Image 1 (tube, helix red, strand yellow):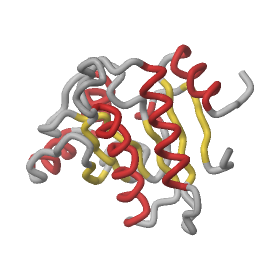
Image 2 (cartoon, one colour):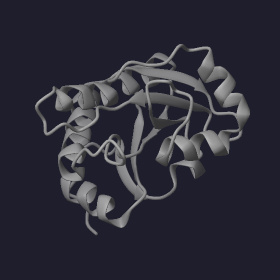
Image 3 (cartoon, one colour):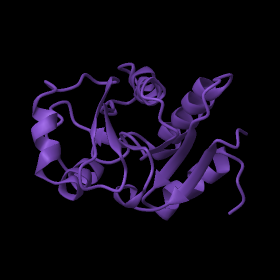
Image 4 (cartoon, one colour):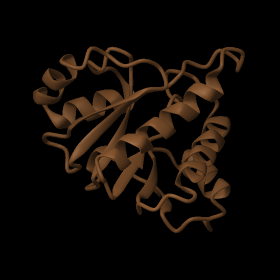
Length: 171
């Protein structure tokens, strides 16, 4: 496994990395879960900047400043709503990770933290979502010349255990 990838149990809004990824909704105007927490902590300036972006399609990603967050930037990505796996959810979820990583590399970022995208209100089964996340990130980073440290930031202990098992990390 790449030494560039780690997993932690933490609140993503407290991480001092180059960018945190926001599991956003298509409007980019805030919501519940991680999205709401990021908007609350970043302050009203984030909402103002997000309004100027015109939303975001599922699987795509957009970058903003992080304002009052300890990170420098927020990469907003819109994960798919789980519909039983019949509506291209796996491809769309993988695109969230790949497009976020593309933005990070385009902006020469050195550290990036992902939450568990689509596993909250969007209902994606956590094990399946984590497997897609790990496969997407490992596959994307394999052979990249630019060194990017990626952290999977798990808010729950249960998610942490899933990611540790996938990354073959000891408990």
